[in-house]
Structures are given as C-alpha cells and as structure tokens.
Image (cartoon, rainbow, N blue to C red; front, side, top):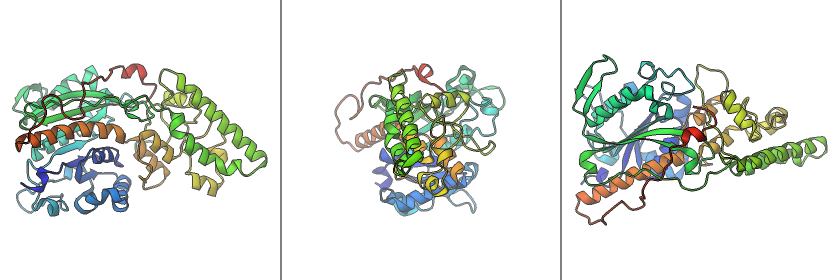
Length: 431
C-alpha cells in the first residue's frame, strides 16, 4: 500500500490566488500541484505556501506551476518529456501515474458562460473544459470537481453540458467541434450532477452562485452515495463581516481631533447605519457578487452599474478599490478611500473578507492585480464544503476496500440535501 492510498491528494488547474486550494486543503486534501497562468496569482500561492505553517506539507511536496495549463504534463510521457509534478515524487516514491490521484479540480475560466459576458461557451478561446477532460483521461483520478459560473446551467449550454458529462460517464452527445452526434465510451465516472451552490449559504457574506460538477469513478463510488453539502447557517451580513475592519480604518482619523475627526465619525456612522439597515432585507444584507475583471479591462472596481447600486445600499462606494489601511494613512488618501459622500471604498483585504479568505492569506502584486485575484476566486468555505463531501466518499471507499466495517446508510457528517434552488431570486448583481 503506497502513501497515496491513505492521503487524499489533489491537483488543481486554474488555481488563481488559492480560493479553491484553501478550501480543499481545509477539507483534508494534500496538493501535489497547483497550476496557474497569472504570474501574480502564482506568486501569491508560492508566498503563502512558503510562509504559513499549516501549508508545510505543500511546502515540501507541492509544485506551484506558473504557466499555461495546456502545456502542463502531470505524467511522464514517451521521449524526453518528464512529469511537471516533481516534488510529489519524494512523497509517492515514484513519478505520478494514472490512477494515483485522489482529486482533479479546477475553476476553469468563467467568461465563456458568464451572464456578464457574451456567453460564447465552447467558441470562446478561454474555454478550458476540453483541457480538464483531457487531464481527467490522462490522470484518471478517483474524483473530478469542476467549478464555473451558474451561467453554464443555462438552457443554451445544455448540449455542451451533455457532451462534458458523456465524456466522463459515457453515452451519446453531439461533438462541439464537429456538430456530429457520437457515442462516447466515457472514462468510468458517475456524474453527481451540476449543483448550483450559493456562497452565502456557507458563511460567505456575498451572493455568489457557482455551478459545481462532481464526478466520482464508478469503481470507487460503488455502493456509496455522494451527498451535496447543505447550508451551514444563517447568511453573514456585510456589516458583521466588515465592522471590525472599518473601525480600524477610521480609527486614526477619529483620534486626530478637529474637523477630520468629526468627518470620520459622521462617515463611519453613516456606513454602519446603512449596512445594519440592510440586514433586514430579504438578502440579509450580504454583498453582491464581486467581479474581478480581466487584463483586457481597466482598473479594479466592484462591478457593473447594477452591482455598484447594490453596494450603495450597503453604504459602500463601488467605483474603485481603496488603498490598504497602512497605505491610506501613509499617502493621506483618506478623502478618496474613506470620506466620499457615497461611502468608503473597500480595500483588497476587505474584498478578501467578502470572499471568505482567511485573514493570514496575503496577495502579491499591485492593488489592481491583488483585487483581480480576490474578485475571480472561488470562495474557500464553499470549496471546503464540497471538498469535505468528496473526501467523505473517498475515505469511506478506502475503508470499504480494505475491509474496515462501516455503519449502513449515509456517510459520517452527511445529511439529506436541503439546498434551495432560489439562487436567481436572491442574486442581486454580478455574474
């Protein structure tokens, strides 16, 4: 029995600044490789893995690969091409081989399916579903997890969703490149549906619906059942999420005395009043979806006009992103960052709170680069919830296959799904 039989291993493509990686790490997965094309996001991953004690395993065994996922080679191929998964060989005792991996995960780019874009789907050059399917075939992991925007569940993409599913599960579908219906053998997976999960159901103070596909190899799943995670409690409001950080940002000016202190007190009080008042609305005062944007667009802000209007109801100006607390004090930029008539702008750190990042996770690059990393992330608490549900199945399968008795029925910690599908009614803005 090799070490990978007892440790849940994962490879993540399109890893970004680590939102999904943090969640899966919290669910018990050990990362063998994180692949990300953006140099700033790659540096974010490297920096946090190098500095945070809880990431010591990845520090020794995980490769952070900064490059195009189309060039990523996880398994040695014929000729001179070695595996790009190098550090894990110390743990595995050999190069990674087909079937070794527990989980292949990826938050493939959302613009091809986003309501905020042109929804070109398979015709968008950023569509990386074909690549993650190729990697699934090459690696044959025990489970596959793919995250995208809820737009992929739209009726116009039903044919493409069917194609993705039959590539994994087997069946008949129209090939997106040729338009011809074909029979596909599949890769031996069972699809556990595309589920739309709302971030606010998992303690994230944000309306951020995401479509998640989970597929588990049939020989692994066997008599077990994958159960989608359920809401963890009442939504957390923007007021409760940001109150402490807002107090810290205004504190130097409240202490300064005079007109500045009076203005700071008035502006902070106005923000608190609006944010608290929003808690009684039907969306419980949670934020609209953060939009990270892309390199093709200008500086960072909090999204389109609909999103900015939703932020205004929370007492926040969405026209830009503020300097960090320390930078604001250093640069005397409080008039821009904090004292606007429309309310304070968020810092990158506050945007990270809205996404559910842990407070010790730091981002590399300038302010705009950092904000884009945050805004494009998969909220860690949602990734953790899905990751735990997958881990429950994989661990139970391992116990079953080595003959360890287990209770009948659902797995430990699992309950019947009670997720609602009222995401469209609750979504205030964004993609």
